[in-house]
Image (cartoon, rainbow, N blue to C red; front, top):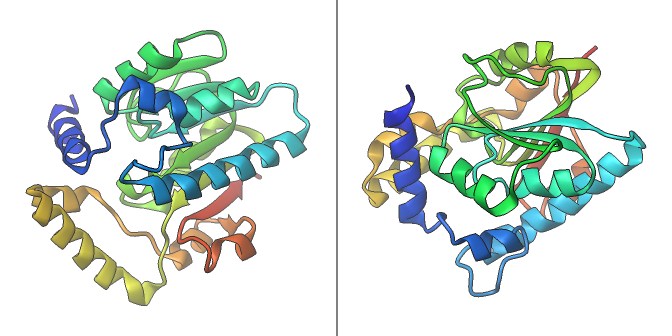
Length: 229
């Protein structure tokens, strides 16, 4: 059903060196200094620690989470280890299979091959829906949010983690850089699946920035959330 896009995405990740061994996966987000993405993982590890602290403050016995674009499942696994009931969803079957092989499946950790925009998502309602560096693969944040809000329990939240968001004036240059980057990898068509979302579009869709002071100069990776009223 999604084979063409799935194959393209996997091939791009493989060319980038992001398809990793089971042993490396077990360590994430704490990467070895020899990892070519060590700096990025260092930022993501800190952000993950902040997110886990945020969940702890909720003082909720078991938080039910849908992790959209979970990839190889490292974040899904950590959330499950923290006591959450988590479903990791993705359209990358090979990495989903790796996630299940490495982290297993149980009553608090499930894997789902699905498109959240078009497929039925079992397990709803969720307390939280999260996107860990994955919302850029969806073309329209407002439409995505409208589609997902019915999957949330009252007062539920959508969190956009570890993505870069832009001022309106920056979108054109960012899109050009992505086009050049994917062309240099030999996959120019991937630029059509990588979307650059503006800060005004997030605000229009009801999102607010979490800990704005932490995500200014230290890291371009941002954290935004919206709450179902």
